[in-house]
Length: 418
Image 1 (cartoon, rainbow, N blue to C red):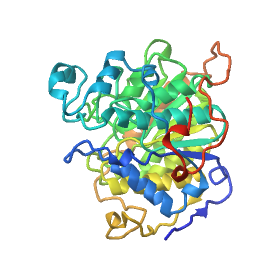
Image 2 (image 1 turned 180 degrees about the horizontal axis):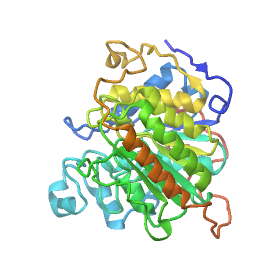
Image 3 (image 1 turned 90 degrees about the vertical axis):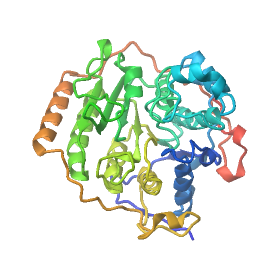
Image 4 (image 1 turned 90 degrees about the horizontal axis):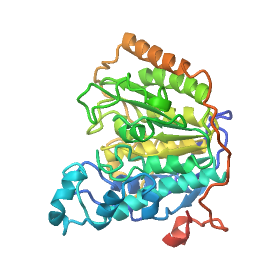
């Protein structure tokens, strides 16, 4: 059974966009370990929902080409990438010293085909940037990406390769300025760190912050350095953040950011661990509240790359990213989940949307007002977008001459040449 969606009302949010979507059929087979909270199977569950809602027919479905070592070396250190290439569960004992040096352990374990996993999710994000750079699509989606904690030579927070940084670097080959927005419950530290000295990339992260909550960074006073001063915005939040409180910050901050920074492209990390009842999160957002961020970013009609991220109640992750794919397409999907292979994961109500819990919202109106005022004041220090010596040029990465067919009819190695 496949259930179609209904178009959103006409207007900025409901108007049509050309969307491409990256998915590799093997992504859900990767396994961090039985007790590990990161479950790549959530990407397969999301894809199954998209299929049975009929959304795959509404966009271009592309298989990501595996990122090459030279792609990863645009950000990551050579010795770190070489380590990821050769490490396996069988040889990890021989590499004990390097495991420690590269922060490989319980949070970021060695598992079978680890390097291939990194190549796959990174390939989708770089591939999405390439498609946007060539102007073929308005929005590119890679739910397997969004690994925002990885550093130059270090794994962190379930993240090994920072596909976001690599995608932004690709976008910068065409666009003078790129905006990165992060709605994961955790601070987007790896991306901020990568661009903290740059005025060409602005990073905006909405996250839980108390100094102890992982990764421990993201204070409102962290604003970037040198030429990048005021180009990092951190929105520190407390437990119980609900839809209304979240949007009271998100919309005015993003509106002012778009006005002042005027990015040529936007990357939105849609970590779903900010949803209510997540196993690691502490916010109280609904799927609709989370998706309101996607809808709002879409309304600016700027090339948009949508990426995944955290999310550890996998049925809610799939709900969220399915609904947000519909938002990207300008389609309001039906709230009743269609029967399919993973239908039993969505009981007892079998609905796409979730209700907030009764947890207390510890974000007082006074604190929200204070945060909003301080960040808007920082934005006001950037009276206009930076004027750089920059000439727009064709992107380095080339696309194949012929459009790709639907994923089920293609081979993995013919999709995108970058």
